[in-house]
Length: 432
Image 1 (cartoon, helix red, strand yellow):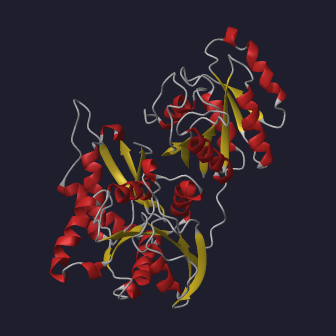
Image 2 (cartoon, rainbow, N blue to C red):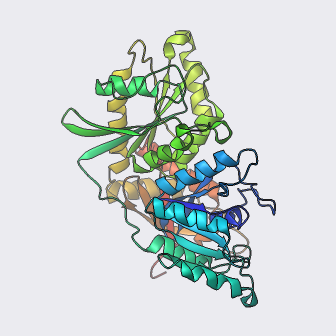
């Protein structure tokens, strides 16, 4: 689910974004227009995972530099997001620019929750009653700065109609992602034997996400060929600028992500940015290093080592070196993606888990802290797709992250979860 914060300049959108995200990501200033590009983060609230997007202020009358681009991006957020938070200044009351935002919502037939901000004390609420005239929308009085009303706001935004699309267990969804001009469309066309994507040497010619269903050895495959993800500062004006939100949505929808990179640039900051979204959204992944025809084949081991080092935040990631031009290794992409998908959906027997767990804790116990010692008594697998494991324990808040990483490494050594993220949940042991 994608939730965007919209509104005119200087109503506190970035402050709310930082409050929900839990860290200072957006630039916060009293100067209008300091949020010039979309800033996004993966957020979690009451076990509900969503992507939160902060947009620049909407002002169709401004003649300032960048304002036209900022307003266009915010308009695309209105069109593409699942949920919208329409932020206003409760101390100032209704501003003509608020009316502009309201009209944009109405023209696009979009619903929103109005966050009436800057109500730090009750005596400042007088002008906030003006917004009650926006009768088609629910509203919440908040102070993003003082953390007032944020829980109620999130309940309204996320509790109602928060439901994922029903899963098709017989279909494997593959999302092809990567920055522009690495060969995503060429690979997509070869895999699907079609020409549905525009193929060009010009970066960004694939502007829309294109879904394509096919069969592979009696398995139903749905490809999601995405537009190129760009660095925020490089997004151009026009239709391309909001392709990234569609690519993020494709990652969210995918069972397995195929991250395409290129030997021309090796691993760029954009590749790491995209892989960060994949990691945050807990999606299985394989890396396809395309344009292998451009390099000396004797450098194969060196290239693989670079990929493993750069993507070390995604453990055991499968790597394929390909050339769409020569059709080299293209036939291996689907089988590898299926293998990773099957890894992410398999369930380990309790007997095998117990054996792995006992072996791990007999080799190494979690470190004590002061007079308290964390203890772990049992392990169980509580979910698949991707796999999740639950540990019954005491004083689990004292377990150091390095020991959790040790447990993950032990599980990976015993079971093939290559390409898959693994989640842990520590709960208080019963009857202890």
